[in-house]
Length: 477
Ligand SMILES: N[C@@H](Cc1ccc(O)cc1)C(=O)O
Image (cartoon, rainbow, N blue to C red; front, top):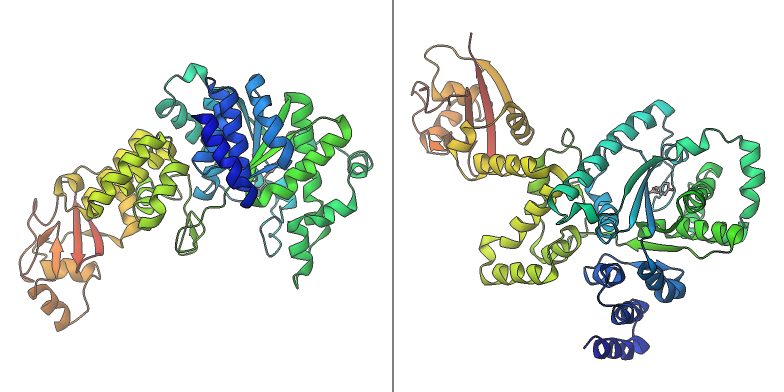
């Protein structure tokens, strides 16, 4: 069976692009040793859409499957702390690492405490602002937290047998650059690089053509990432680096350095840069990033982001961002096609990714907030903890007020600035356009009633029209 699939893929490969060629090789790898999880890994990553390119192209198709079959390998991916949290766009590389870990390979996440100070020009049309060492250090703590949280949730919720997971190590590349003298570095490492190949990198070429050009620091970035790979290769036996597609040039520089210094072959794999069918970069809503740390993007907002993805992105996302077997993805998609209104696939996607990033509690909290705000659940509203309320408050304007005796529905709406001033606002309530705690409040003069307009946790949720929410928290004197 596998042989015939492989044969038919090879036939197609002669006429189509290299990705199909890659497919035939991965299928070959599977065919040679279909019983081992390790060797099936590349095929599985490929089938999920997680592999974009492999480097060096030919060697990675022939030798990499052999290498993976030969025993546990060490794989690394780096993250520069240019912000104080990772974001949804970083998730694919992390998920790539997780797949390797689940197949028993050792995984290293490198925090770029040193490289963040240089600033990677890859995929950027202008130079990053310089970050002070103190900012980078603070950011590194936030990124550490992101990594720690997602890897822990992966272990807890997505690893049937955690004892079989490969080891995870997190390193900061500052630890090996802090002792280098600049002259030593350039005379020892710099001389291993050729200007021709450094200049040929896409990140360099595109910037040289731009009006802004490129600073020497940015140009030198590839030296540092290359040296990281070399060092990890020397000390940890690391032979595979994963990164986004924009990282291919830096990975190639590492390959060149290691090859020149040791004569050994190493490999690079890139994960795709995901955009929604609307063309938005994944993890951006209206230009804002969807962060992995809950103090920046709450579990509720995170869940909502995945819930609202366009319909025609959801199948690809289920394959990329969840660990559901592909047969299960197919089942979910079938349910979705039968009854699109139920949004089964979106709900499953949002639940799986939220559980990975925010754990079971984060997912429950996201669902509670969703029920309270969008599914008219008074019970959910009443059960909300203070932090959950704060999450809701980020979605809706929030006012804390002292309750004057005799306050009316109109007073509450005015103080929440939910209705226009004057008779128009009064009329809006009378016309039935205002709900308090999910019940229509059509009498502006009605005095607020505890247990109805004001919940036991001191909360009033005002809704005007379909989606305009305002939250009042009544303080007792
Ligand atoms: N350059 C990578 C981060 C990185 C840093 C150090 C490395 O060794 C590898 C990767 C990025 O910007 O995404």
